[in-house]
Image (cartoon, rainbow, N blue to C red; front, side, top):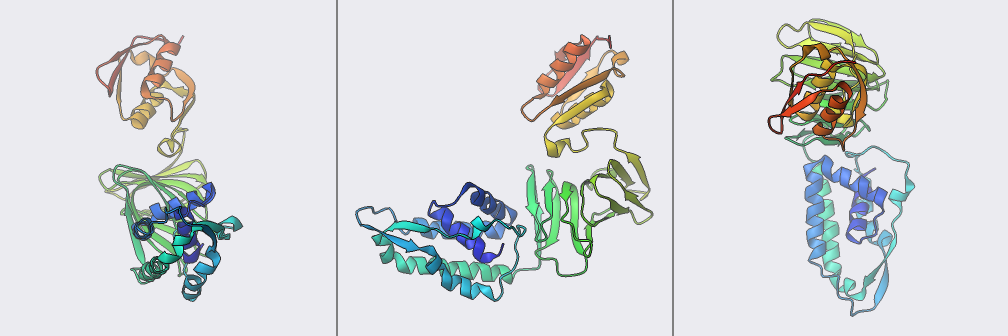
Length: 345
């Protein structure tokens, strides 16, 4: 989608004529870049101040296609691809005829200002620095790159990326944890530069965890294959494989991803299939940010099978385990639990 498409969606939203799918696309575009939000907020402010609510006048048909012609002609020459990927959904390019009060025409100057402001901000976007940077803080975030790559960022992560990919390589800088669903383009490899390693892909999905305050990085592959280069050594990872890079020595090891919950932070669910209780407890602690102690070490090898979704809290999970193994649960506070007794049989 190009600039005019997003401007059209903004006006549809202001006129309450936007579909649910279009609203989803517009919201994702707004969240993808702070400058996009500035544009929308400015347009909404002017629209709200235009006083379109006077229903004492007869309504007339206003064809928004006509009103957008001037804006589209000026944008046509240097329109650029933005945050969201290209779509075949033709509904996004249809502009409806909207009923508006006759007083609308007395606000023609205000509408012209909307168009002028749109042109000003988009002109600003086209002249911005070539790179954007996003920091997640304590909330997760989804970033859509110009090539269609989707990045699901975990908390306290940072990404720096070009607004468009014009060279032979698609390169970004990243620090933190994210799940990458990279758009396939064999002619333009996708490279992620972290402070500790480079990850090269052609089109695949995988998870990167590379926080600067942790001792190791982990790259786990779901589909396709990726190349990881620590600066000291390199390896090709296949699905269900994980590379662990030591931040100090640059040594790298590759192992099978035995846990079904490598991406639990992203999927918002936990799955266990004959999983040793020790691993179950470790996954629960990481997922729910709690501490679970066990008084009877003999139960740690007991196999456990179950699954928990985003609507299940830690108490639900712990009580399920307690029921299966005859365990008594002692809760010290909201984040500290002790499992007492129990057996595998």
